[in-house]
Length: 289
Image 1 (cartoon, helix red, strand yellow):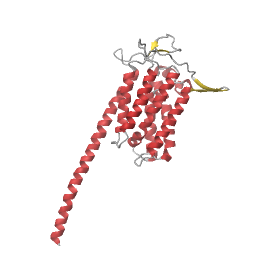
Image 2 (spheres, one colour):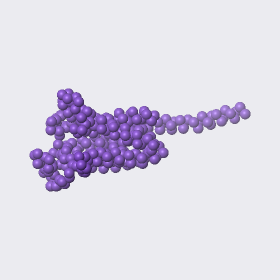
Image 3 (cartoon, helix red, strand yellow):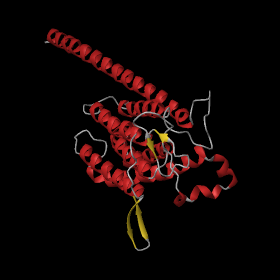
Image 4 (cartoon, helix red, strand yellow):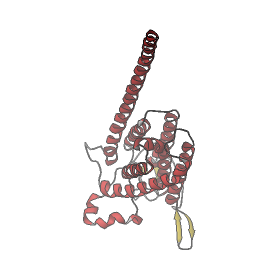
């Protein structure tokens, strides 16, 4: 059995002001996103310039916060929202959802892409490698805050969380997610996007891989107590929300490579016809002369 490290959720206190580790994780996530964006903006084919990165990160942050809160309220606490709609605005009470944050970022990127007059999918492919690092830091914040823990286990990797009223030996699923959604996903996306890819391919790969990783970890993550399982006695809300991501990711990859293949075939056909047309024109010209 693993021992939970005694970490105070409050990282720093200055008088009445308390700085929580969860907030620090958000700052590290945005700082990491800014660093990756600056590196990618230096490439000649980048959709966003270095001068635009600051605005891009700000728009993305607003999308994460507003969308994450909206998703948490609507996807996981819709009945409470119906009873108290103003609760949606009380963000200081906590509660964020990745799937809601994703929708918020999509809306923010669509608006920002329109502002800088770039195709949305081109901007999305630019942004995708910035996301996994933030996911990894977020899951570490969940671990420190002792929330979203795993199901009961008898394995040697189990851990008892001090805040758990049942004091069960549980999977440290936050660390599983930090590894898969953070480190592994970041490595895979950076490797995949290292060389030019068809438009929408990088975004499609991200959606597919995240959906698969999240779907897998949900088997050892404790479902929300007030929701339980949605279908078949085993499908959780997180898995239900991840299925569309997997499907859309696969479709985007297929569309991106099919579109790229058609464009390449057309270019090759034009190149094949052009020399013939040139030879024909030269022959006609020689006859006239």
